[in-house]
Image 1 (cartoon, rainbow, N blue to C red):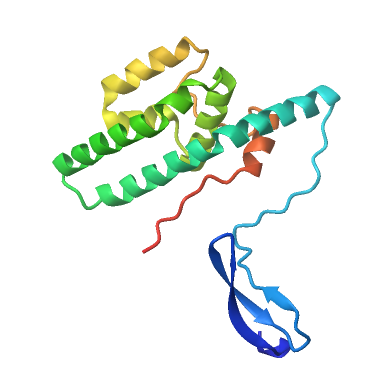
Image 2 (spheres, one colour):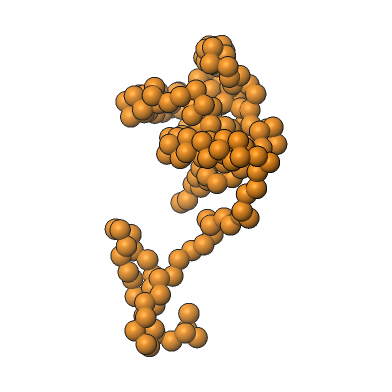
Length: 186
């Protein structure tokens, strides 16, 4: 920002380096990229019960957010890599990821409530634009997808349903607050 005058430098905050500008008066301005910032209007609710439900969903979403974010990252990287892999290499890569994910996430995910699990699934479905059933079918095959869909029905969830904007307005508001997108960058 030449018009401001001053000296360009780097500032480290919590282990991350950011470009900064030290002005002629000695003030330090950290320069940040605001591309990933989303600003929304204050939410209004029809009743106090709706507000409390929103708060509950938001707390649950905050708990499952890291798992949904990691799932999207792995899905996007696998999607990108599989475009350049043979079917055999792709299967091997999926098996490796499955083992890694089982070791890392099996215990924490076992402790989720049904609602927390549903919120996580909706986060993933919203980002990928397709039902979890289709993702499982593409990655693990039709039989596994059928098995998991049948199993999920024991917990009142249909993996074929997918995310439908407007179906659950309070959930839509919560999901708007959490960005689980992942971009592949060279």
